[in-house]
Amino acid sequence: MKQQLKEVVESALIELRKSGALQLEHAPQILIERTRDQSHGDFATNVALVMAKEAHTNPRELAQLIVETMPPSDQLVRTEIAGPGFINFFMSDAAYGDVIRDVLRQGELFGRSQIGGGEKVLMEYVSANPTGPLHVGHGRGAAYGAATANLLRAAGYQVHREYYVNDAGRQMDILTASVWLRYLDLCGEEVTFPSNGYQGDYIWDIAATLHRERQDMYHHPADLVMDGVPADAPDGDKEEHIDGLIAQARQLLGEEQYRQIHDEAMKAILGDIRDDLAEFGVEYDEWFSERSLMDDGTVNKVIERLQKSGDIYEQNGALWFRSTNYGDEKDRVVVRDNGLKTYFASDIAYHMNKLGRGFERMIDIWGADHHGYVPRVRAALAAMGEQPEQLEVLLVQFASLYRGGQKVQMSTRSGSFVTLRELRDEVGIDAARFFYVLRKSEQHMDFDLDLARSQSSENPVYYIQYAHARIHSVMRQLKEKEMVWNQREGAENLHLLVESHEKSLMVAISRYPELLESAALQREPHQLAHYLRDLAHELHTYYNAHHFIVEDQGLRNSRIMLISAARQIFANGLALLGVSAPEEM
Image 1 (cartoon, rainbow, N blue to C red):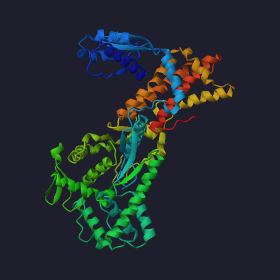
Image 2: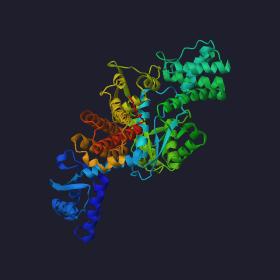
Image 3: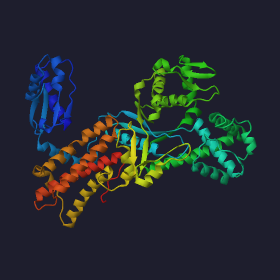
Image 4: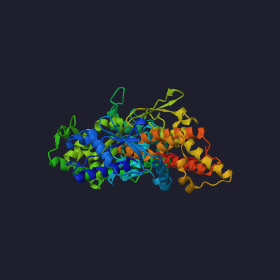
């Protein structure tokens, strides 16, 4: 509808400029918005106000000129000029009838657009270190990322979904040392486990597999393992202690055996992450390895390029990137004094790799605790001669779980956290996916487990799915009465839909395409979630107030056509959010 009105206004402006009645150097941007008060019409535009100064004319007079020049349209009942020069549009019943016909004709394609223009976008989300199972915090990033990717595809973007596997770096070394120490326990060695190690049961599981398959291959005496290792907290420094254990593991095992344990641990955890996300309905086009950037020399090439441009300097044995020259608050280390490259060095290389693959826009979805990381990555892109604006970072706040009104306590390192798999088992995939996107991603979220499990109108996902199922129940009742819905006859009799509930439902359905576009452009799937809840309210209200299977055949077919259109919108919208649309509940 908005697009059709825009074309009508554009036609008038073209005619006015052609005739010389309107002198403008540039064609204005025409913004059509829905009115908040229906007494002011269905839509309005401020185009006359925007153009008035350049056109050297009174905005109300210009608005009148536009209205008089607009070509006739059966979509419009009338137009009004309001306030200082707004043009209000009152849509005809025929216009809303056309929307209902379009929904059923286009089916699952209804509401999709090409506003993205085929822009190539790489979306990277979740990308949790493969050091343990996914927890409920990762789940929010997964649900948000997947829904946003679906919305962008629906808006005409070419979206490549990617998981960046952090298979290099210190956290993976801590994981390797943690698994090895548990393995030594199973070999009969009494080794005090480090306070900074990974302590979940999954570490024991990986160690047990190693011990069963490799026997004593990695066995070394406990006193030799702890020889020369700095004391752990509270008597010593926990970071120095774990680093000492990592160094000892590398020395005693040798690089080949150390890498074997590293890879076995990563393979087990990454495989679990893949399965977990797939069961959650989150799929990727590519799993990209951080280590591959090390192995193929990409990280070294990036550092060398920054050294040649003078953007890297040496201090206290470490290499620093001059990120303050590009707006960051302080310079950043890319190579530590021990020669190890930082995550930041890999991230620079990774983002350059993305651009090298031809992506025009990079959308990274990070946890809100990484907000300070954004300026340094953009600074690196600027230093490499790229456009920092090509990187768009969307932040996701953590989700707190509540059960029985009490907050569920979680700690990732200690292993006392609620996994994504446990959440799914408790509330189901649909409730988890929907609740995760019900709020803006940058807002903190309280996830009420009791509400998510409930089968009541207070549970938004149940409320929406029940609306969809109710429509299917009408179709089953029709079949039981040995009646057939005649869609052609329904389309011809939409003018019979004169009840206020019917008009409200038609208006709600007509909002879907513009809502989809807005949700995609603003990266806000919560807009779609709230829209579906509002649409469900309109459907339930209509269902409770009227009978659909009535004696009047024309009215019956038109009413069923209307709710069938609503059913299609529910199915389309829920699919984009990764939620099922059940036919029975």
